[in-house]
Length: 158
Image (tube, rainbow, N blue to C red; front, side):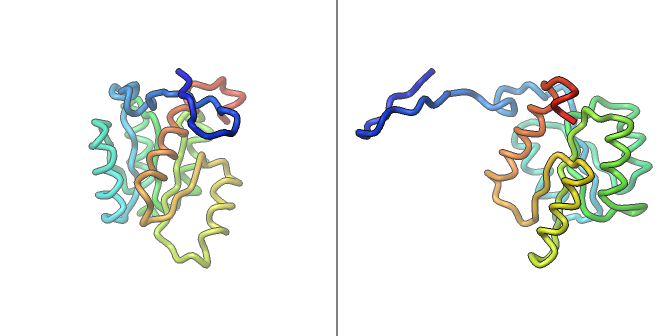
């Protein structure tokens, strides 16, 4: 549906669509939340539960591997540090074993390191990167984008 504009400038079409999250397309899947940071875990967990998205919790790579073996995972939020590695290990593992699962790196670091961390995450093919604390609208946008990647052909999504 295209909505009209009231300004004197040419009308720009705006699609009125429901997000994949709001439409409930991912209710049968789970989002993996891998972090040792309890504040981040609670914050993201609360956001996801507001959308009725089930989360699986992990603190290390071995728990992540176990969760992936037994569940249909829609996306993975990964903290910077885990008990047995870092987000780099998770991104590399998922790219090799489950390339369809987008990884969003969540970092609670100082701004001086943030841009370097962002570039590192994207260079190793993380789906996205967000700093904590985050704006809820940013987190929703990133999650919607990550979930939409699952519907692209493999050549475009990876």
